[in-house]
Length: 305
Image (cartoon, rainbow, N blue to C red; front, side, top):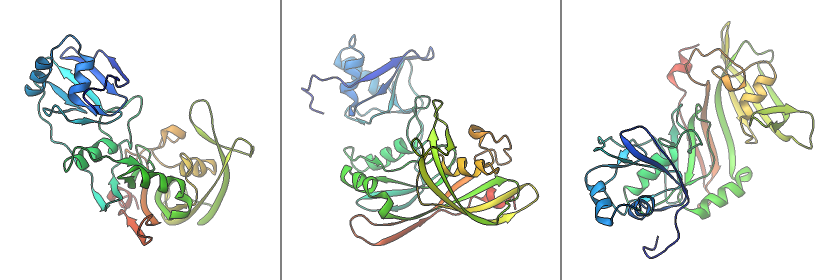
């Protein structure tokens, strides 16, 4: 951002606990010092730099002293009355990385990107930290998302052109997407292909509909890997990527994914959602080579059978 640019980043702020002055959510990328000067107009430039030098400013929970630190959209900046204890920045397991994109193994319980309720620790922010360790001008761009409680293979692009190419041609570039799902009960059919139309209600919940005008077609194939008297472990492949597709379609036939309280499954033996994205296969958008990325089945999944 040009230091002489008078335009202001769009932000929102709210009072937080007494030890902090304010919390700000970033709506547009900008440098940290510029951001602070605009949000703290009563302080001089030297006073703001002193806050940074004294570890009184944090971005997503980690204290930052670098005045030209590049903020990303949806970052959360906190200015504290006291020094903020240093916290080690975490890195995600990286399955693959080249000049165009990064593939990670996302853990369960981690949001892909920030939401209205959660602004801090996300896969997006952690990967942004990772690429900016090499160059603060580096960026990443979300290609697709995994639900917060779904673990496994997830991809981000390193530039806008690759993101747009992947999103625009996702159906032809991606050749296979595989998931492990643990569902309630024994499957009537050991393997099957499910065809449904999904729509979204005003509570942002997906549901199966027969109305083709409002629903979007989706297909899910499953095969039973293992089963016991209470649960079944399925190998699931999807040829479309609708929101909550696997959870809704399997729930519709009476076999909810365990731990899925969003769609009415109270059983939670894993203390997490029983869904893991284990495979993403695709044609490299630049090199045109075939790539297959795999994440092993979580130990807690294996322990149930």
